[in-house]
Length: 221
Ligand code: 6PG
Image 1: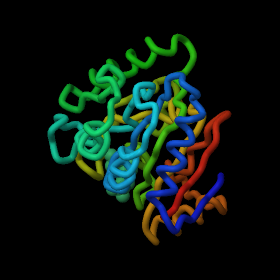
Image 2 (image 1 turned 60 degrees about the vertical axis):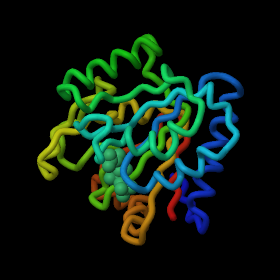
Image 3 (image 1 turned 90 degrees about the horizontal axis):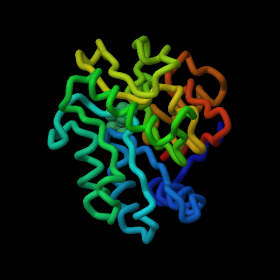
Image 4 (image 1 turned 180 degrees about the vertical axis):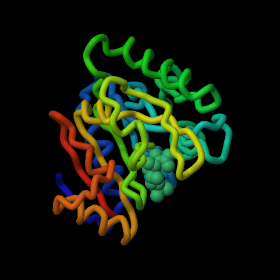
């Protein structure tokens, strides 16, 4: 795994996302957005870039089980900071429907991805991921059922510690990506990343992200 400690985190993240989009060379650029707070400033800076937005296909690595206008919604955060500011065709934004019954929302989303990729696992050009201080990524939290899921691409995942359900990509979908970029900020998380890089992943879910053929970069700010 490649780790880059960045002194200009937002700029470096934007640069790498833009470079990945250029590699799509005019074809569809399948980009999975991550949630939480870290990416907001990155998305706002990304929105100012002159990219081939019409070629972007946006997915979401996870979503809270709330309506799209809820303050906890990852979709809402992405809309406010990026999607409402760039000309990505509406039909290219594949929203995880947090307002629906979770299992149904996960099944519908997976069906939509399968329709676009046939029998092959849907391969993103770039998946953005964050990491929590417990080592979770997307909504793959330690000791939750989604960790062991290998057939499904998208599942509803009961997270007892949060007393809630989340919608999330599984490792099967994540590890099929051409590129995975972790966006991680803060001293505590920096220490976690150093531990994972040394092989002391302590079974953190984030340490289980190992793209089969794709690249993996941890950008630490
Ligand atoms: C979510 C995210 C989650 C997030 C980490 C880090 O829905 O919360 O997908 O995996 O990336 O929890 O969140 P922060 O960036 O807020 O620290």
